[in-house]
Image (cartoon, rainbow, N blue to C red; front, top):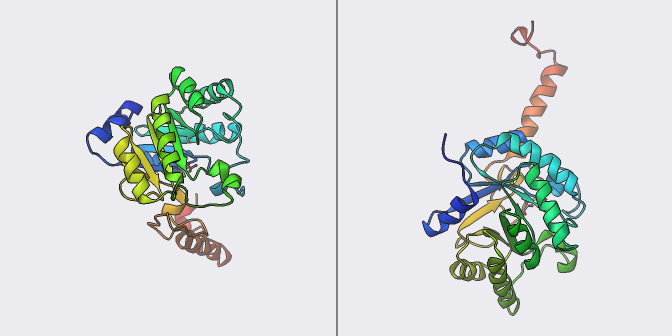
Length: 261
Ligand code: KIV
């Protein structure tokens, strides 16, 4: 079996000039498939809320729901670095809350955790507890109401404040960071100025790696996003398969002799 990707091995990829590839997964089946497909990191993202639990945003996702899905994903992952999102409300109240929440995710099987925004003291405290922390800057979905929707961040004057924040997060101890929905030029500058890997989603080709939501890659969701890479029309394929199964039952063509005992 190929060697496990640890947080230090993830960081080392940047120095070696190796591109990093990451995808979300929320259960054992898809986590296992992603692991076997050779992803460096698998993220049990709080996009769980939108893509699995049917919530309107990531905001309602609880720590308990993250733990539940993380345990399932852990069962499928052998080699990839398994990162879990700290959900909204689990770290904003201060360093104690942040460390307790991060510990809960580690006990449920995470190799590392991720949080959104300028929580530098919380990053340092989680790091001090021996837990690798990833940052997340640009459009941070847990702040969607403050942004007034899914909007590109870091245009014009905003760029400098994002650069400053990413540098502070690096000093606080992040081992990598997601850059979401920011101009490609800004992502390129951050990637050049930081020594930890940048992982883009809607942040251009110059990041050290890329992350996508698995349902977007597989084309399972009804929505089409500009930043999303669709590598399969999963919704049509699944619909066709389910329709074929339904029809086979209705027409008494399933089960066959081969499916019977
Ligand atoms: O929750 C998630 O899926 C994420 C990715 C968009 C990076 O944070």
